[in-house]
Length: 197
Image (cartoon, rainbow, N blue to C red; front, side, top):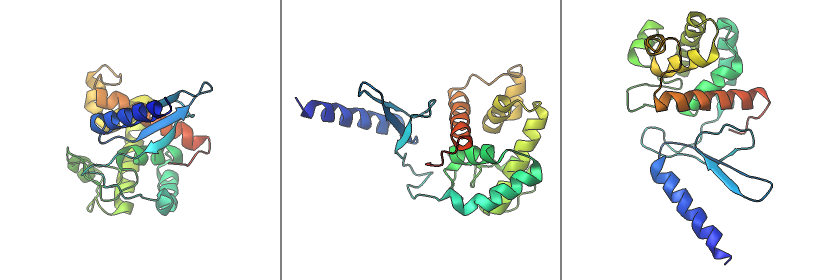
């Protein structure tokens, strides 16, 4: 009987691997000993358990501390919450300056070519340029949506026109809905001093 829980755990992890091949997996064990898994943590009890691996985001571990001074500098320059910037970077690229998404977003803050051009970013793979462009864009979105964090984050993912066309609500796209939850989870965690991911 002792082997069955391990067997079921392996099956669950395999299902997560194929279903959410690009997602990090988080888990926590409740007071009854039940193990909970998710790819969209909404509770601070969840801890990173398995890092998603795919061709767009290599499995190498990227240290956020390397960019800490730069993030703080841009946070001050554009008056954007330092932890929000970290949360967006974590959700977008996991601090990988060479990340490229299937849709063509590039760099540590995953700027689309048009956004990079609008923000005067010449080299999207240069962390300083990319972070400054991403933070400048976040500032514009926060201003456009009256500092409504949910709408600004949704617009960063889906585009400001998608939010406007949805009558100033989070667009009903699963990717965007999950993205907003993920960024807000990271923001809460970072703001409470949890920097384990």
